[in-house]
Amino acid sequence: MREQTFDEITAPYLRELHLHCYRMLGSVTDADDVMQEILLAAWRGLDSFAGRSSLRTWLYKIATNRCLNAIRDGKRRPPPEPLPPFDPPAPTRHGDVTWLQPYPDALLDDQLVKRENIELAFITALQRMPPRQAAVLILIDVLDFSGTEVADLLDTTATAVKGALQRARASRNAPAPPARDAETERQLAKRFAEAFVADDIATITTLLSDNAWLAMPPAPHEYYGPRAIAAFLQASAAARTGSDLELEPAGANLHPAFTCYFVNRLGRRDTGRLVITVSGDRISSITRFLALHELS
Image (cartoon, rainbow, N blue to C red):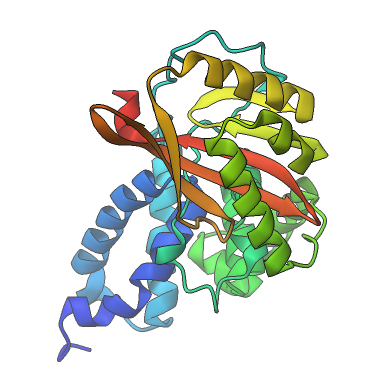
């Protein structure tokens, strides 16, 4: 190991460690920040790494504990809530995971990452769990570490890990996602994009499932059901004057996703990412992520 440079030693693990931090923190921005701390800690501790575990396991120990520290110390801070440029209808409810961000498919090896372990619903569920329970669930159910290994990673007992895993699985309580029909998903995404840029709310409504919802992190507003979603989209379209919409495909979390642009006489402005979830032959969720520069 001493014959290799630090970069050579850690390079094979950087992408998976970054994804691990994203699952823990729900934010690409926060994952980027914590990765810098992880690499610094690994650099400083490399000489004392005794090889009692694999290098990968040692790096995951550093990464998991740095993420837990970031959550405990309040370093994971939601972006400021944006003020809408129009008067939106009353939301159905207010969401509690306003720091959620999409994870670009370009950073994923989709041959190795299972869809159910990166979908937005799963990432959101992780954010609502006690952090150590989320860590145990990720390490065992997603990354296939053993209970004994996780006990060592978290400096706790196998019994405590077993209990945390049981509670995490119970709180997740989510059915397996339906089988994915790539062609149906592609066609729905295409029809949605065409209707969205045309402000064709009626067509969008026909594409939604009865229990569909729309969320807009970092805004807490959430709208449930086709009628509530349509009311929000209509208010948004009515308030947007002098600008057209453009969508460009840009997958995220292995969902169909688009970069959203406003286009007017002043040019073309990236306003964030639009991610949809398809269940069966309908769209079950729309998540509109506002671009970070729109918050300032």
